[in-house]
Length: 106
Image 1: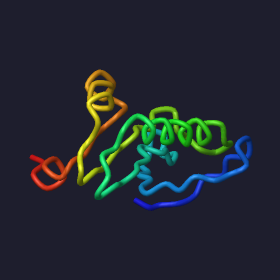
Image 2: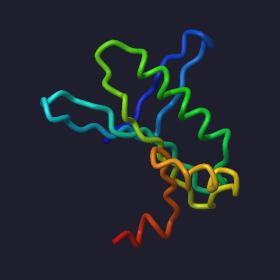
Image 3: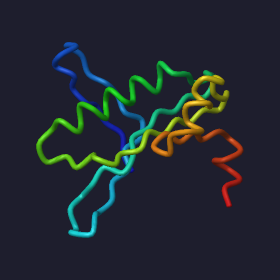
Image 4: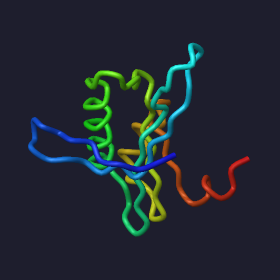
């Protein structure tokens, strides 16, 4: 796992990524499994998710980046808004990791 920055030429900015997890597919090619954002004292909401989705879109457009199945991970010590929880409940590509899940995962 690592962190990094993704340029966004259309918006003339760049986006920081707190977490990027890589793996290999059945052909041995490197794939981007997940990207994530971490907040300690801030409840995460749809704005955080939209930013991660924008980053995923930018990465999917890059040559040589295999991000077709990239998941979006939101880590928060303060929790998540109800609208983000509702959305994540119905979308397996969105994972919400609170302190309970992080430290007590089975």
